[in-house]
Image 1 (cartoon, rainbow, N blue to C red):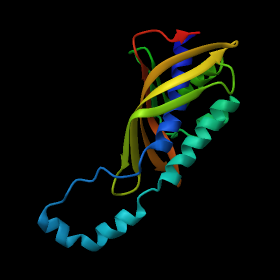
Image 2 (tube, rainbow, N blue to C red; image 1 turned 45 degrees about the horizontal axis):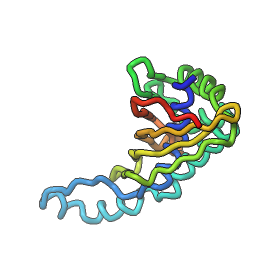
Image 3 (cartoon, rainbow, N blue to C red; image 1 turned 90 degrees about the horizontal axis):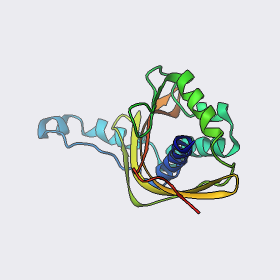
Image 4 (cartoon, helix red, strand yellow; image 1 turned 60 degrees about the horizontal axis):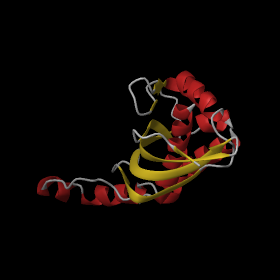
Length: 187
């Protein structure tokens, strides 16, 4: 039960984190020779980078589906690539491919009261995208609050994700959520 709550919190934190991350890239400088040859191409590539709004769209869809406990909506935010993976804290917390991810979210939905999760990812966050505007990433540390059967809980989550463009839409290919060793605080 605790694992499900943590995974749910991490997933929602991811959505908030992505929305808060800057869309700045992680581009490395090219050598002088390559830079001169590719100046025009480089300018075009930078213009094609995803805007923060494009990244937010997938996260907003994910978060809304979580809030609504809409399994098909959640799954629509993940890549259909069979190597797409959701990771938790321990080695046993790995769900790869649509079938396993769907099963994990089915269990996650059982572990919280709809509409009670809030997150704050202000302590630390970062993100970026590649030059080709096909991949983006993020990482954050977040404070989470939610409840189950009216019993409030608080915990911290570390979230990281990679998303890619698939059929013209951004989708998760890796979503990793982990929590501190200490159990959630129940109030």
